[in-house]
Image 1 (cartoon, rainbow, N blue to C red):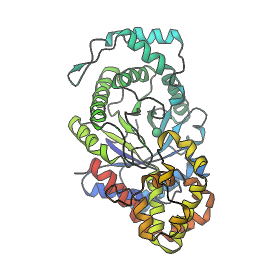
Image 2: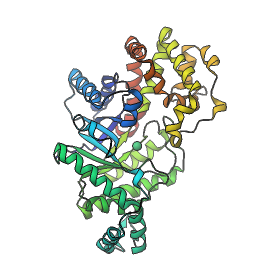
Image 3: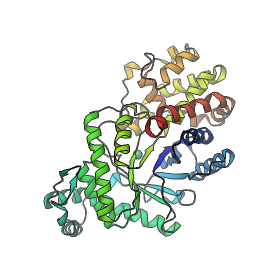
Image 4: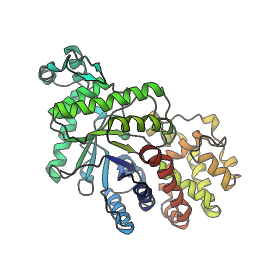
Length: 414
Ligand SMILES: [Zn+2]
């Protein structure tokens, strides 16, 4: 069975130019004694926005691995795929993130809910998580099954479609439930894992929706104490579920929209270390933001293009923000005008965009707008990708430094 390593990082490369710079961050970790396996992830939504094909992700990953001589595992993740979007990813991916958030809350067959509840009635009173009993009375099993069973059944259908095409055991399966309205409690996670095991899905990573806000490209917003408590409970639930339901032994949490969540990296690291659990953290747009930072830092035509991207993004703000409305918080009053940004130096642009919370010039509103503004660069076509090549030195340096120093090092190294 293809098995995901204990520690892994999802990296997104929207324009397929940064795979080497991203892989260098994992090589830096290896040099410091930490094995962190890269997983290149790109969703159907990103492919549609950029106008790219899934095989381009595989090609870029393979080329980077070959050129840099990476001998450890690496994977290509069909991120957030559904039954109707999985086909295009079957050849090029060996990691599938099955997204069933849309099926959460859809009614399951009452007979299936009853069968599930009967089958797991003996959980009640038997589960102790971190020294505390977790009651799962019949009413709670029924409620959670009513809400999630249909979603898990749909995940099963997608899993079986992939397995039929590729062969069971030849790919890594993740189930994601993060793009939904309400977070899942640790008790809900336990019951969901029971259903996933019943469905026969060999899940290696699970992405619940955690408490608090995971806005794109900026820090976590929420109750840090509650987050850490629930994260530890989730880890304990997974350890229990692996033994009880016979799920894969390496099953671990996957943290989506995990880039830039600096304030929870300490709590996550502590919890993972103390429990011995594995961890997958997905990042995507943080690398695109480093491309824009690298352009601005290069000055000259690079800086001009970065300013053009901002000017176009602010003009199309509503259109660009709409698909990401649930995962951004932009205060339009705090966005500088295109004219103002046009007058900025390289240093001013970089200071506003780079995620350095200690810098008073850092502007999280501008950062979130550019985060969702990659469509603007996609529409520039070759003009954009040629500039990426012209400014490669400063871009690659920023991509590697951001991934290693701000993400991999605090989470995994030392
Ligand atoms: Zn996600």
